[in-house]
Figure 1 (cartoon, rainbow, N blue to C red):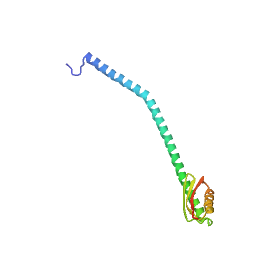
Figure 2 (tube, helix red, strand yellow):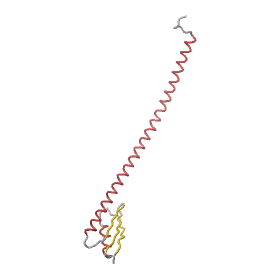
Figure 3 (cartoon, rainbow, N blue to C red):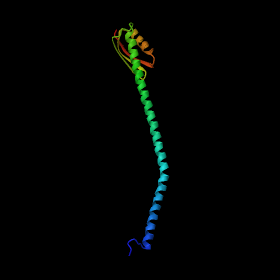
Length: 138
């Protein structure tokens, strides 16, 4: 018997096994081809959403930074104008700003100085309101 000879049954079995394997591969490829566009669309939507979220977060961070700079500028400007006013005669002064709202704390010699501090503070660009908690000494 020749070692390279096969029986007809063995050859038919080999052909059937190869055909079955190829048919199974084809089905997987069809399924993969059908699933791939759906997965790609889902991934694209997730990427678009992540980009939008990132854009919103960046805009919020820029807005917060701009507000912090504005508040710091307002505080410095109010403090400068109050301290350079010879009419006020301020003894102690604390100026804080949050979102354009200026808070004044400290002591002044009289009620007129207290009112003038409010007017000077309110005149600074960017000030939305003044919370005057200055205490009159006399």
